[in-house]
Length: 312
Image (cartoon, rainbow, N blue to C red; front, side, top):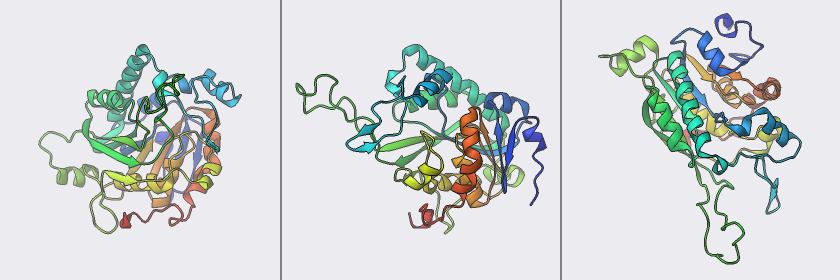
């Protein structure tokens, strides 16, 4: 099926796929430029807009120079993907984070149809601030989706005092990833059924076997095969993303947006479940990576990606 993407792509660099389009642009600029109420859901894993994704820090990471990115690259014999140390953020950076997400969420509210859902990834350290900022934009907080996944974050002994306090860890070892679930308010007096009929939004799609979408999903780390396809530092597994993307369109129709596309894993998940989607990415390196990564990730066998969430 041929889709007319012109109102979304405008003059931005674009790459088209089966039912989706990737656009190289700043998502703030892009969301101001498109029509209001133009997308049905948003599924995204932000870089948080703080210093770990500034050009100078990305260059340091590329050159192995550290910056705020976690070093060393190996731990207990396992190679570690570089990840931002969120505990290094100052109070002023936290204030900037809140302001950033407040302004960003206002634009998300602008482009979402009434009743449309936002799924936004966070972490246990920043979720409170990020979710509060998004709520202050006027989007309704609808709870958290918990991705159960063992990470390498936390669990460390007190720095430079490991021998003195061997029975202490400075913070808990991470075993989950919180995703905020938000909804653009329904028009006054409108019921969910009315919203579904008019806007195709308002609820979440049930699992293929008819059971309700659940707010806890067991998830392994991103498989090596997927990381080789898309070596992005925060790549989420297709087995997890496809479940969220599937649930985000209650009637199985509409348009999914990822404003922080990265290497395109959300767009690939939409392609895999047969949804239309738009991915926006500002960093040229990641946009270029997405050109090959999106079709390759979308073609991963559902069994390999553990998509059989009817059994979860």
